[in-house]
Each structure stands twice: as C-alpha cells, then as structure tokens.
Amino acid sequence: MDNSERKAPTGFIGNVKSRDKMDLGWQTPPELLYPVATYFGGQIPFDVCTTKDNPVNAAEFWTPDVNALNCIWPGSCFCNPPYGKSMRAWVEKAVEQSSSGTEIILLLSAARWEQGWWQEFISKARHVCFIRGRVSFIRPGTGDRVSGNTYANMFVGLGIRRQDDWVEAFKQVGLCMYWSSLNDVPTHTAYQQYLKRS
Image (tube, rainbow, N blue to C red):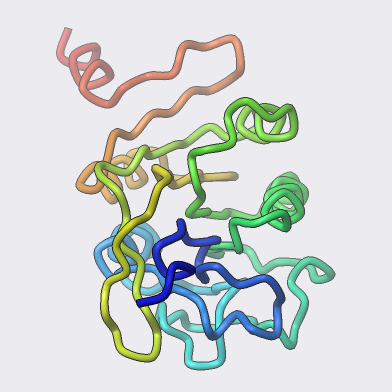
C-alpha cells in the first residue's frame, strides 16, 4: 500500500485531485449508506456526486461528466463530495439548492470547524449526525476497506422534511442533533425523548 492510500479520504472519493479521476478514489461504506437509504424510504433517490458504476445504488445519479455544481439538484438527494479544496463549493451549492426546497443529506469531514465558511454553512443546517468512530471508506477496485482516516465524519441534513424519521434512521450510526433556529441550543435525541415523557 502506498502512502497516499493512508491519507484521509477526500470525500465520497478518496484522495482524488480532479473530477475525471473520481472513480479512482474511495467510496462510502454500506453501513453509512443504510441510514441514508432508510430515511429516503429504502433507496437513495438521487446521488449528485458519484461514478458511473453507481456504488450507492441510487435510483438516479450524476457522474463527473455532469458537473452537479452547474445543475439544479432534484427534490431529494445524497451528496458525499470530494473533501479537498473543492468541498467548499459543494457545500455552498447544497445550501443554495436547499434554500429552493431540495432535501439534501451530505456526508462530510467534520474537520473544518475553525473556518468561517464552514461556520456559515453549519449555521444553515438543522440536522446533524456525528458518526461514531472513524469511517473506513471502500477501495472501488477491490472492495477492501481503507483504514487510516484521520478525520471524524458527519452527516448534515439540509431541508430535512421529516425530523423523527431523520433521528430514527441515523441514530444507529452516531449522535443525532437538531435545532429549529440558530438561537436554539442543539437538542440531543435522548434529551428530546426525556422532554416528551415529562
């Protein structure tokens, strides 16, 4: 194994520097696709950032041949973008599309908290799931897991329409939090359940 494979993945697709090389990177493991598909009723309706072999088994998808950053995204979709310098553009596009009513679930690195653009982005998210443990992404050619991810990961929901379904689907993989506005304190699901019983 060369040193480049031990680096943290750059998103849906590992340490890939350009869109035309996306199929050489790392892919989302099935245990993280399961809650996304569950939330969407059993199958991911649309993946805006994938490869031609459609590893997430989305009903519809875009490959690098279709630059999703220049498209109007469908009503409900999943996005695990490259985590390198281009991640900001993907995140900003997701925020823009969610403001038009699109429901988006993103799988992201949780290692950008100090950056102003990240703080602006996360302030628009109302649903977050902090994934337990480090994600071992999948090497597409072999299906092997790639260890050595140096970043924590998280799901972020934009425009989520069914809050209870979000929590039910994602609580198996991590801590789920949601809030209704920036002035609210994020609510942990266990505390929310306590409040419902009181």
